[in-house]
Length: 357
Image (cartoon, rainbow, N blue to C red; front, side):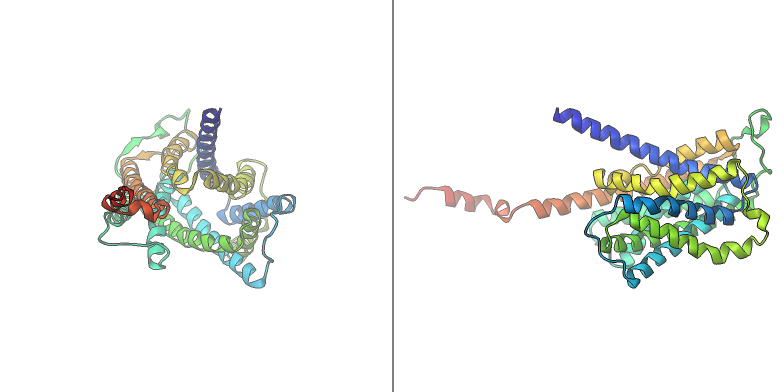
């Protein structure tokens, strides 16, 4: 019976993580389709954050966690910082996707652990011992991930798969992405995930002070929406732009607001509580393959050799970091759980157990 429950738990966690990766990739893919149909990224960001905040507001009262600290002005200011950073990362990231492709965006997302590790070392949130082989593995993994990101952005390479020649299967797109747009989009995506790493570190600190996931996510979306208004409203002064028709543009906003920045974060948090961050992070490179398939089949994107090679290099560096972190965590737990009595020499144990003469 216990074995069946354990297998069911493992299968449920695996299915949830696959679902989360598919929904995250689906958000990026449907956004690209909405932009191709004429939706402005400014309109998309404001409406998606507002939708998510409206959906999460009643849930905060229905599933309220007891024993939470009061919402002080200082705490609200910290939530505002999280929302502003999150908006900045998404704003720059969607510009990068608009100039490149969802496949490039998913490939570049795997440099986020390397950037987070580098920032955590600078802020002394992560211990780094230069002479330790585990730290050396994590450093090499960070450098390999950065190298892979450079390959993805700078080396486009020949086309491995191009659906544009088949007029019956391609979608309506506005021509091929220029080489300069590809490099600019990759640079914006790299900046986006750097800002996202800063946001991740701030969120990890603030959530410890207020352990209410639904409330934190609600204020994140609320303040992100408020932060987006000074940037998005002046960029789109035509009132007709803010009228979204009932096509893929409206569905992309609802999908992002409800699934992406709403319930997706809650499901992801559940998986972190059940299996831990190492297990969850192992599924991140899977988004590269999912995005490539979605982009080719649904959007008619071309698959380039440079993106494939760079994605493989990024994944290798990423798994090196995850492996080094897992070994480090295992050694730390072993040192904590090992009692002092078990570390005494065998000779002393024999002397204590031998009968007196």
